[in-house]
Length: 147
Image (cartoon, rainbow, N blue to C red; front, side, top):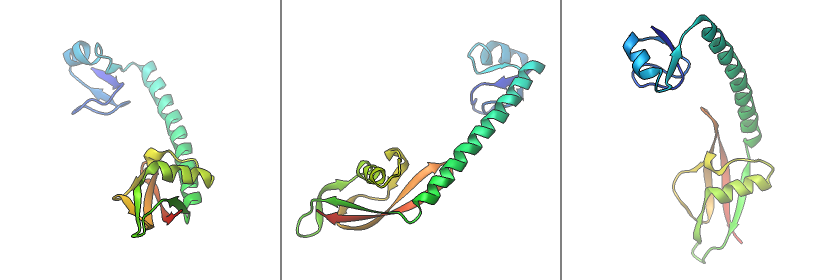
């Protein structure tokens, strides 16, 4: 029996794969659980069209992410914070502050896409990675200064 997977199934396949399974497994588990549907000629045509549309949308998302990566190249942010005389800041600089500084510079980036290696607890220069899409990331320079 051929079925079209609606979700990823471990050791069987990924979403939108057409796989051959035994009749009992398909009829008694995959289809009732909503994990698959029977692969009829009409459903295969619908699947093919859905895959084409998904690829077009994904190509647009990738193009947007690459354009954003280009615009972020060479961006250097200055984040002002209160610090003691020895250079240690009170608290730490977080991704929320970095996202806000990027927003002030004209780049709307979600804070969850920003990653910092280690903690920023002293004045100085640091680097942060911005993951824009799968495999598309860029680095930005952060300069933590005393207010």
